[in-house]
Length: 354
View 1 (cartoon, rainbow, N blue to C red):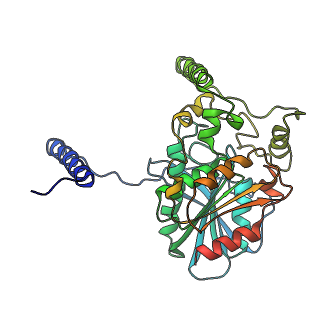
View 2 (view 1 turned 30 degrees about the horizontal axis):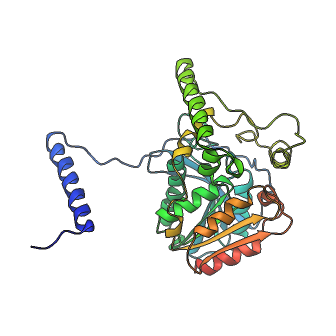
View 3 (view 1 turned 90 degrees about the horizontal axis):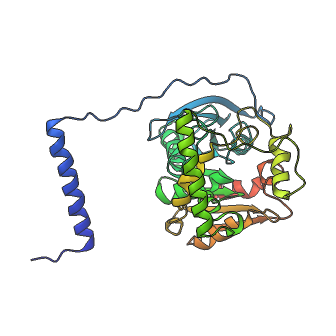
């Protein structure tokens, strides 16, 4: 008699559970769900915070994630023909595709990649209700849904697809790279680990007691919101530029001025739902970062308050195809538009999306 191993036991348990599901289906047949995009109202005019390039073609597109949410994106395509390497871009956390992610996408398209910059679920022009909520699971899935879309385009080589996440979407991108083997290369620029900062506060200043009090406050807010029939917004940046902390002033300089303000941006306006951070507290994003086999490039500013997120994430990564680049003199938001090392990013994607 052969001895059972943990692997065979797991397979047997999975088979048994599927059999039970199938047995139940005999009594009540369940049809597979179809992928059905919802109609979205997309703007026709160019309303980005950066100038439109005449070197690439641009169009609005939509795609559907595994939770049935339709996402809106801007597609940027080189005006040359052929089968392209493709890159999906999103972020920063609380921004929209008309801001930094669109700039990254358009510039990389000028350098020969087919790119999309998408609004994550529940934000911008993308679908999903309630509005203005973030999820470590669903927002990671948004990247994989973008890969679904790109991999099924006739002008994209499905073996040459990468992703790029900015700020909080840098952490989501690493989580997606750990889960989705179709992703061949990942860039996380000026990365935040949103699960870490929500659970531990900035610079890990929050302890267990602090987390308990935070959970208590947020769950009390859930009750109040449900009673009121609407979700309370946490509030965006202040109307007046703060003197300190400096990184909040840096955010203000981007989101509240002509440099980066956009009417659909949460950070430029009312912010996320107050209870949006609840799921991040208990769901660490980088648990399996050490299992990412594909290439990863982390880019961060030398003077960024958030630099420790990339440096600590880099310690988790394994393999010679992982690298960390520190941009001299740059703060967190400089990598939104002012000091983006596009040559470095282009070389990385050119190397690993061959």
